Image 1 (tube, rainbow, N blue to C red):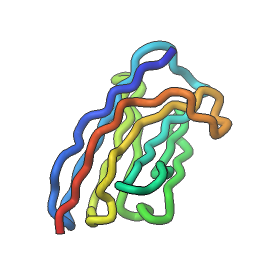
Image 2: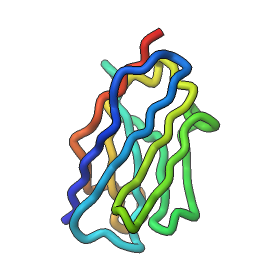
Image 3: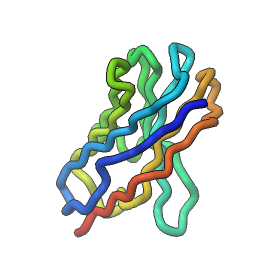
Length: 119
C-alpha cells in the first residue's frame, strides 16, 4: 500500500507560480511512475504530468508543456509539480497518483489540493 498526501495549492494571480508537493508513505520503488492529474470544475479528471522513479523519463500534457515541471526526490519520498505562468484555465483540484508497474494504471491516489488562478 502507498499513501499519498498533496500540499502547496492555493490562490494565485494569472502569470504567477505555485509548487505542489506530494509525499508518499508505504512501499514504493523502482517500478513506480508518479503522476499529477487535475480535475477542472465540470470536467473529467485529466493527466498533467508524470515521472519515472529514476527521474529520467517525464511526460506532460500539451496544455502545460513549457510551463509546468515535474520532479522527484526519492530521499524525501516527494514528487513536485512546479507550475509557472499560470492561467485561469489551470484552476482545478490537483491529484497525485502512483502507477506501481508503469503500465498506465494509477492505483494509488491522494486526496487532492486545490489550485485557483484568478484573472
